[in-house]
Length: 370
Ligand code: GDD
Ligand code: MN
Image (cartoon, rainbow, N blue to C red):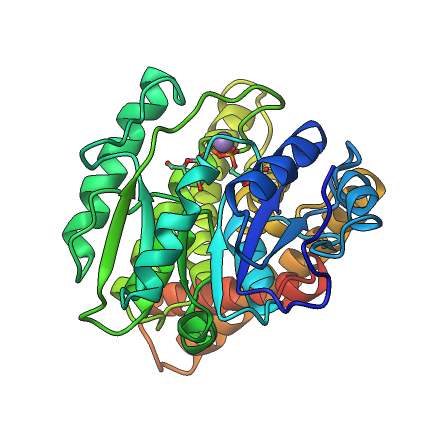
C-alpha cells in the first residue's frame, strides 16, 4: 500500500493504536494515515492484546513492507489504557498521538493537532463536543447517555476545561507522557482522563473538532464493566492512589459474597431443611464460588482466567479462602479469649485480616496480577 518517503528519516509523530479484534481495520487505517500524514515523518505503533482474529498478523504483514509500522503483541493481558501507555512509552518520536484502530476517529485532523502542539499547546484533543465536532452515528442511545454522564462527572474533577474528556483521540509531546507515566493508573479505558488528572495543572489544551464515525468492521469492546473501571479511576485519583483499586474491588466483591452467603444459607436451611452446620458449609462454598467468578470478571479483568487455568485458579482460590476463614475464626477467638477486644470488634478484626490475606495471596497465586 505504502512507500515510505525515506525509511531513514526518524519519525516526528508516533501514532499509537490500541487494537483488539480489529484485523479487518488495520490495512485501511494504515492507508488512511499515509494519506492524511503526507509530508510528516510518522510511524504507527499498534498495540494488540493477542487478538484471536489475527490482528497482530495483519499488522506484521504491513510492517514487513513498511518500516514505519510495527506491532506490540501483549500476551495474557487486556486493557485499553495500559495498551496506550505501553505504545506511547515505546515511541521515540518527539510527538505521540493515540487513536482508535476501528476507523471511528478521523485521521484527517492529525496534522492540525500536530500543528497546534508544535505551536505551543501541551495537548491537542480530538473532540466530538466542540463546534464542528459530531458524536452522532457512532454510539447507541444508551451508550450516548452513559457517555454524557461520565463526561459531566469528569469535567467536574478536571483542573482544565475540556469539552470531550472521554475522548480516546489526542496528541501531545512525548516528554509529557514520560513525566506522567509512573503516576498513571493504567486501569480502564479513559487514558486521556488518566493523563489529565495526573499531569500538572495549567496545561494548555486545544480541542480540534471531528465527527465520530460509525464502525464498519468488528464490534465495540466496551461493556458494562467499563463503568466500574471508570468509577475506579476517579476514586484512585480522588484518594491520591492511597487505596489500591484492586483491593477496593476485591473488598466490594467480598461484600457481595456476604449477601450471597446469607441468601444461600437461608435457602439451605429454610427450603432444603439442612442443619445449620451443613448449611453453613454449603453457603460458604456457594459464596466462595460467586466471589471467584466476580473477581475473575471484575477485579482481575485484565488477567482473566479461562479454560483449564480457570479451574486450577478456582481450586487454589478455595484453598486460599479456606485458610483465610480459619485465620478469621482463630484470631477472633484469641482476641476475645485474652480480653483484647469485645466480640463485635474481634469479629471485624478477624474479617479484615481475612480480606487482606485473601486479596494478597490470590493476587499472586490465583491471578498473578501486577
Ligand atoms: N490493546 C487493546 N486492548 N485494545 C483495545 C482493548 C483492549 O483491551 N479494548 C479496546 N481496544 C481498542 C479497540 O480495538 C479500538 O481500536 C479502541 O481500543 C476503542 O475501542 P472500542 O471498543 O471501539 O471503543 P468505543 O468505540 O466503544 O469507544 C470509543 O469512545 C470512547 C468515548 O466514550 C473509544 O474512542 C474510547 O477511547 C473513548 O473513550
Ligand atoms: Mn470504537
